[in-house]
Image (cartoon, rainbow over all chains, first blue to last red; front, side):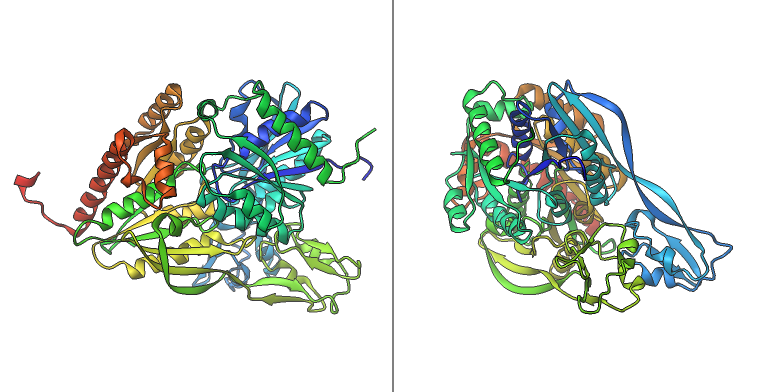
Length: 294
Length: 315
């Protein structure tokens, strides 16, 4: 690798709706003041980053994300059923020697193709989503978007992660999906730092616990941003202290912020908010043993 | 599911934090309060299960959940020939720290088993690991709760959703209502939560993100041919967004059961351990009217399934 790799910061949460996208968008703007920054939307089931940047222009063309799925060459098939036995996803059923393939359940692992003794399975590509680059004042955006009705979100997430280096940014800010199962896991994998966004509610505390367990199991440095601070009285900071995870920022709850947030308006003119973002940027850079490019 | 008389109502939203769990809890409590009705709350947001908090649950039984076998490589049998790496399409196999063998990164592994077939040394082994637990609980507020906790990093949440729903259906007798609280998004666990549902309640947060995500959910619900009604939440923050949400629903042909305002009183109710039904004032009236409307739809669907003939004079 000749090029220095980007520093990757993943914004995740456990619970949905705590403010991941808001934090990701503004952190990316804060980073973009001093470094080439790419904001990557990995919440491919509900990609909302672009809604915050209505003036962003599509760069080039959207790239389809394709997964190879088996197709049957019936004249060669002997109906032996080994393909169905090998499939761990229930995508192939063989009844009375007749093979039926459910393309939408297939993960594209290719195991059926390699076990077929009659070479009766070929592969065709199914489109499961797309990735698109956008550009807006000083900030690059890469969006992953899964097709409605598909279940292969991780294929789209991995495709976006693979495409991100094309932008050659020094910083990647990833907006991750909620939860702690495969889409979230894939989204934080490879990150240098994870910011977990929490709000002072019982639901958020419960889900933050699971998210902290996930980042700890992956040994990724983690900090918590408390959003909607003052909206509830649950002690997120006390919980973080107990778990030895630093609180690296607080965003006060204001009705005016909830109002402009509903319209996905950026808060770049909110001085105290952007100050807080700058503080988070400094803490995160400190936490990832960052070497500034010459 | 069809052929039985239980009625399944799935609450979903697309966007996270739109209010699914609070609305599902209020609905389940309202249904359980009707004499002769039985309600099971199936918390199918297994990544972030908050139904137990919303309903003040006491665990009655717990069961282990096995996701199906995973794969690992025995370091002492591995010769680092690299055939498994070639076979793996998910880039989930990496060199070990000492570079003498390969290891499987469980977080990236899709558990397809392609590596198992290709290893000439038999170094790839299958293991069965508990991926979580699921529970049956009694709640202070009436509904019986079935919920699950997935181990963080485990990848089979759609399958666990099915396990939770199966348990809920076993507990539900004739004439009962199952309220399914779905995960955010539109992916695998959501499809597992909506499949076979008699009614989907789409919670639309009245915001740019909420509307976009709800639109994708509407497309999914239509493709799955489910009946749906909508509840708007967090209204009153932006008149423009309120009207855009209404227009989106009208264009999609989804009836709107009611609108709930963004009101800190709702948050206060949760903090004092109550559902949204407990609050007074204008917001309280809107919650009650909306839940009442949804309840009416659910009960009429249930009567149809049971072929209950309603005497004309009561109509």
